[in-house]
Amino acid sequence: MFLISCPFCGPREESEFSYGHEGHIARPADPDSLSDAEWADYLFMRKNPKGWHYERWNHARGCRRWFNVARHTVTHEIRAVYKMGDPPPAIEP
Amino acid sequence: MKARYSIFSLARNALNYHQDWRQAWRSPEPKSEYDVVIVGGGGHGLATAYYLAKEHGITNVAVVEKGWLGGGNTGRNTTIVRSNYLWDESAAIYEHSLKLWEGLSQELNFNVMFSQRGIMNLAHNQHELRELHRRINAIRLNGIDSEILNVEQIKAFCPILNCSPTARHPVLGASLQRRGGTARHDAVAWGYARGADSRGVDIIQNCEVTGFRISNGRVQGIETTKGYIGAKKVACVTAGHSGVMAGLAGFRLPIESHPLQALVSEPVKPVLDTVVMSPAVHVYVSQSDKGELVLGAGIDAYNSYAQTGSPLVVEHQLNALVELFPIFSRLRVLRQWAGIVDTCPDASPIIGKMPVEGLYFNCGWGTGGFKATPGSGWVMAYTVAQDRPHPLNAPFGLERFTSGYLIDEHGAAGVAH
Ligand SMILES: Cc1cc2nc3c(=O)[nH]c(=O)nc-3n(C[C@H](O)[C@H](O)[C@H](O)COP(=O)(O)OP(=O)(O)OC[C@H]3O[C@@H](n4cnc5c(N)ncnc54)[C@H](O)[C@@H]3O)c2cc1C
Ligand SMILES: [Zn+2]
Image (cartoon, rainbow over all chains, first blue to last red; front, side, top):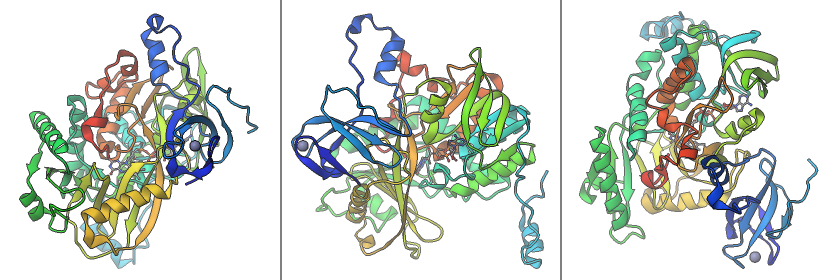
């Protein structure tokens, strides 16, 4: 269990949030021109790193807004919380 | 060949106060090159080694494990074995595996304590009940034993289950696979390890694979904490770490790693002689031979490699347990842990060739691969030996994510364990 700082409401328990998986996966700009392999890549392939992970969370039992988090997948430490649309911040390893 | 285990060897060793048992497998230093290197000494990796040697005569093989044998999900799972899957492709591979389980202790000369105590899946609402009927019919068409129990039959089969119509989630019916059950998880790893070792396979523990050497699109060997090991073929069977291994080899997989928690209660006298699973309230429970209740539920939602999970998942699972079994409400929990499971979007495994020549992966079993250990090793050995999938695992290639031929067991199986 960890605390997540919702950028709109402040620190709350993990149980108030829903997980939105890997962030920064851009929807294809021109879906009609995508090959099957490109669709597979967009829909299914994931980085799944052992280390820092840029991911989305939703404050489902709170303000119900989406935001991004940089979280370590071994220590669960959260290093950055930032808004949707913002670029992923660089993180010192 | 090793000395066989038998009642006579047990008696003979008892006379010596069990001082003279020989090690069940060697711990050799790695050779400079192997025909096949298997990364991951869990049940699936060890079974792959065993069947490579036994079925395909390939014995210049090493199993490289970063920790100890079975220290991954093999030794952390709740040991449910069943083959009642909905889709034909899954039915074929899980049933193949179940048939191997049925002869496994004899085959390995090692007691894997496979106990066909039955596995019962509960339905708590009309929709679930209809789904259950549909699934049972499909499963029976595939020749796999499965039956429906009504509430009276459930009460007779498992008297301690709360079947009161006024329960918060009343039990309306259940499916039962009598050939399903549980097995001793460590014994499966140890039995396969012993069998593989006696056929010449080198089992190398405490040796982490840190990279692949790849040239001209073909794997040449692996970098490890014990140095470089050459390999004509590399089979990666690393469960929760498969995404990390794919990253080292330069590609991505449709896999996320999540913690899956389990717990055991203090030991009590025999009270539950089957496996009960409820997808709706989400808990599954059996009783081990030691008397502990073995309990599991769902994954933690977030990606993690921490082999721990959040208490809220445990709370949820215990709520469900005492709802179904009020008799357990005053039991204490003895131990809790998590394993890192490799979940796939369609809750089916990925077994086959990879974008690098000579590199094979067997992963994506997620929350439910223990039951598949023998069958998975068997098809993986075939795939590596022949450089092409066996018909049983051909549908489970990585290509399905491009072709769209997903084998969606998520909705189908309800609970994927
Ligand atoms: C709590 C829990 C309950 C479960 N319950 C069930 C159940 O009831 N029924 C069921 O069928 N399934 C269940 N499962 C799923 C099942 O345990 C797994 O699908 C299965 O064990 C995977 O088998 P494996 O042998 O491939 O994995 P593992 O035993 O995890 O083996 C993979 C091995 O690879 C090693 N490894 C990883 N990276 C490296 C590296 N770089 N170098 C060298 N070695 C490496 C690891 O140390 C590990 O030993 C459960 C899982 C968990 C965690
Ligand atoms: Zn909020």
